[in-house]
Amino acid sequence: MSLFGKIGAAVRRRIHQRDIERSLAHFERVSGLAAGAKQSYSDTGTFRSQVDRLFALGNAAETAELKRIAESSVLSTVMSRYYRAADYLSDILDDLERDTYLTGEPSGEAPLPAMAEGFERELKLKAIMNAWLVPLKVGSVETTVAAHSKIIGRLLPYAALQRFERNVARLFALTAASERKLVEEHVLALLETWHDHNVMRARFAEPADAMVEAVVCLCGDSVPEGVSHLRTRRPDAPLRLATAVPEDRQHYLRASFGRWELEP
Image (cartoon, rainbow, N blue to C red; front, side, top):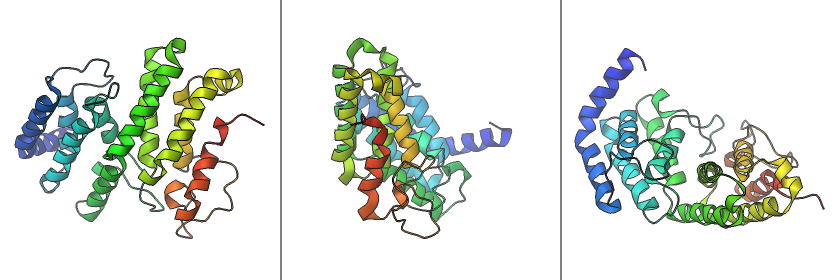
């Protein structure tokens, strides 16, 4: 980070200090854990370090949204056997810090730090919250991660379960709440197929790799086969899940999961 970036982060931290402390106190009250200690099995830093990272991204006008993100990440994971609050918040922050494709805008949503003050930042924050802070989606992540643990078991090291968890969470973030069951069914079927068939294990070294490939398709970086006839909401928009017209979204989803299926 540049000198000016460090100075800016320090100024923002002073502005947000009270809300940072409130967010950390909320974590400790709900979880019973110390915010400055790394959570067991977490593969990111402490919850405190992630909250510092979160508030460094925002300005004084965005305090309410930042506090909601921090506290919702705790509430969403407090009952989870696998997903740790620090990891979950880290994954949300990754999306805040990079290009995302959630709203149907042809060019997507730029990283929050690159955006000018105003409505673009507000739309980015809203899109991220609507994608990630959905209890039903978090429930589906927990369901699929639990299935990975049960079905795959010790065929793969624990790190593979962590990679699956983080990537399947991003997959659910890219899809609508109304599409949750369809996605969940395909992911659960993939886990069974991967366990039972060598050809699928040859295709994907681990289930997390299949999640990564699907995310790439949903973002439009690699368009799946059989979707050239699908329509976008704007004629100038590249084809991806977020730009497909509502009635074509399920077709795009199924096509993106096509490599998860065995040849008949």
